[in-house]
Amino acid sequence: MSIESYSPVRERRFGHIRDAIIYAGVSRSGLYNMAARRPDLFRKNGYATLVDFTVLDEMLDQFPVAELKKTERASRRK
Image (cartoon, rainbow, N blue to C red; front, top):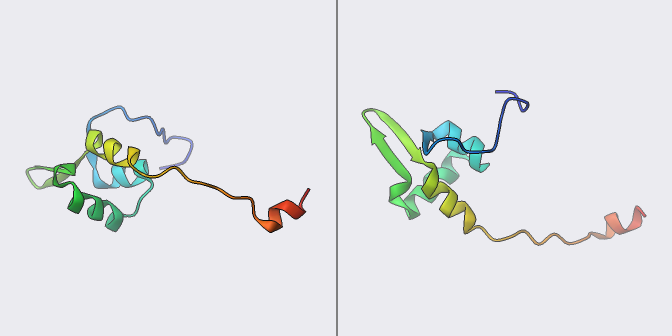
């Protein structure tokens, strides 16, 4: 999948694990750690494991906002 063809806008409620990893920007193990905290994140459809993107969005909304600080090196570039 190229960057040009990837759209971060979610168009469906469920997707495969690889889709959720790309969407959320987390590793596969990170996604499973999230599912340990929210068992309703994963659903089964036969053999396929699906990710509920509504639950994933709720979890991502709980991530803290990044507080970026100017470094000394960045200050010297001016």
